[in-house]
Amino acid sequence: IGEQLKCLADAVNNRDYLAVERIIVEQDPFEVRRLKMESYTSEEEPNIIASSSKSRLIGCLCEPEADAINWMEITKGKPAKCYCGNWFKLVDFEEYLAQPWKPKN
Image (cartoon, rainbow, N blue to C red; front, top):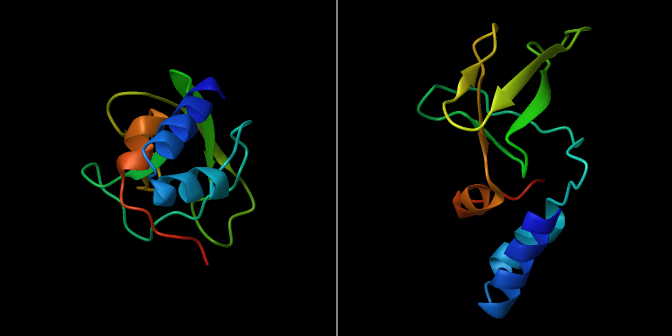
């Protein structure tokens, strides 16, 4: 949470209101929010997951009709691939906020 607050303070001080909006909209202090994944991911363009920790446990619903979750631990560094083919990359909040933002509908 400390890293998120520092990012928010920096955004406010720099009058970067788009970053402020993004931080507020995407708050997830306990990292439990369900994210909609892109339809196609690759090692070069993985699903980006933000965390202040060195590793994080994530669950992948490999298919829309799936009744089981594939759990895996990802660590910061290289992207990780789920057995279904989806790619994930764990990054710091600074790197996450530097990504182009696609507001959620």
